[in-house]
Image 1: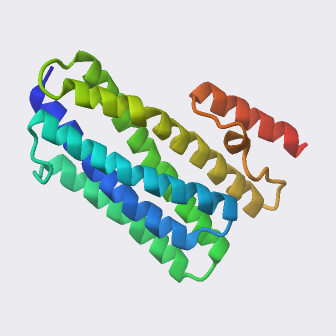
Image 2: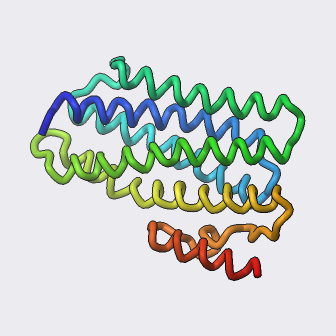
Image 3: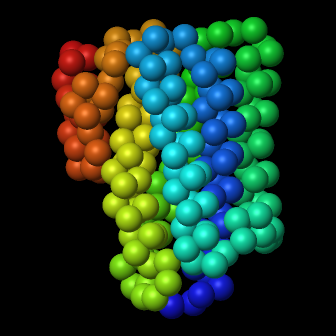
Length: 198
């Protein structure tokens, strides 16, 4: 294992989760659909626990959680750009369009988040020594939540776009109603939405 890259991954993941709190806070200002609002509120709370878990991982692995790195700075910039995009959409005055922009921002953030936790899980499987168990426990707790965040958010985004196009949308999306947590389940849910449309 490349210890420097493990540290970089942990720091970037922590930064991304911190940015995720800002993204969800801003997205909640844009959301119109009450079901989606409830979901994003729950995801914001989970994201707060993810920050705490990663701070614990840093402590267990002997990593300074405030340490800067070039990659961490890039992650922070991407998160800030997503927040700014939502604020700009909201300021434009079309609430439905701002909701879609917020949903897209969440999908983009959750795609990176999902990758981070997948990689952290792979690292946890190989790590030994101090902190390895703490990382494994965090991954066991959080990776399933990240699956839900990504697949449900993608379903919401797809259906809100379809609604905006004047087509029949399936809201809440099947990913939500079927509690999808896998790529295969997401594909089935999307097919189910197509069947419901026609």
